Length: 515
Image (tube, rainbow, N blue to C red):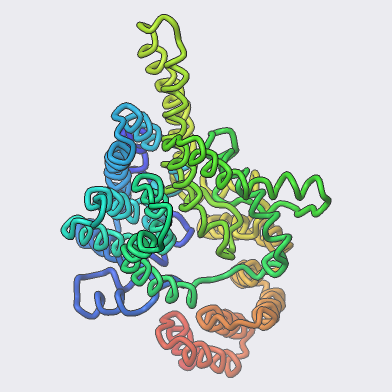
């Protein structure tokens, strides 16, 4: 089923959202050289440190070159593997075959996974799950009443390391293992020795995760929006995000590649409703433990743990479907338990199995149809951004669709879209307008747009050297169009001082000097 609902993605192209950075213009995945591997494992790339993700692209490139088919093929195969591993994880954790089967089936077809499966740049989600799920499975195999079997325990740590090197967000997984230990090992009523032993078994996970997490914390982009500096507003917003995530998981929320940040209201009623979202999953875990309902405690606990990074790390993206890839498994096994529970209430008993089967088929079909439909959005850059701007006012959507229009030589439409994007403060929209004006011979307007780009770059405070080099290159190109050759050469030289590998700046400088 995982393969079936995502089969159409094999025809999809790369999209103009990080795919060029990760794949088509990434020099470090071109061959299996020692230099490339050393660079991948010793240096962060594109504001993150996830070397296993880059190695997976390296494998694709060695097999398929830059044909998107092969990259999509690995993506759907990984998701299919994750679905099978999800079945084994739930089966070993809860000991119920049909619960595990239904949960894994729903996981395989869930629409919240479209972004992680259809978008090549989101490879980190499906890849990290392929290591994370076995890590939990091996921990369950290793766990005994008093000690851990060394073989499975070592395997769990190895798989956890690979998972964290694929996506740092999974660093929180040991918290779920603590919940499992607390629930199943039944700690003694007195003495700290039991807790010392249990926490001690999590030290290797913590040490590995902490090292990777610190590197990513240093290099990753954090949001600079006002709410991130106001604890109350931040918590209200994240409570709102929790309700959005539950709506996406239930299949009733309109999915979008970019979700706009909603207005934050601090009046008592609105704030209380939103903040209650932060309490929902902890309350379900507490209730599940209180009534000794392991399915509820573990399901809500898995969701809570896997959502913690998205909820409390100040990421620039308010809500994203890809943050649900791991967390959705907990939702799926809670939904599977609800289906089996509803079937068990049917009378006469002979119809219970049929009722559960019909409910499973209905929910799975609902999810599968939504997955197939939403997959089509990700077929290419034009379909992706045309869909996105219907529900999002984010400047990235307008800018990316404008770039598609530039490739189509639809300059008027590109200008309109960049101007819509420029309503939000950002360098990229003005940089795009510089290109449009330059390509249409409106050099004076191009220079004004370029000046605006420089001003916004300076206001941001934190210098992006790659962006700065590009701004100098574009200004040099405009000045050359105005026959201000000497000034143009100076700007090309500045671009090359910042980024010596800027080939276009070098070509334009040589052309200017030959005039």
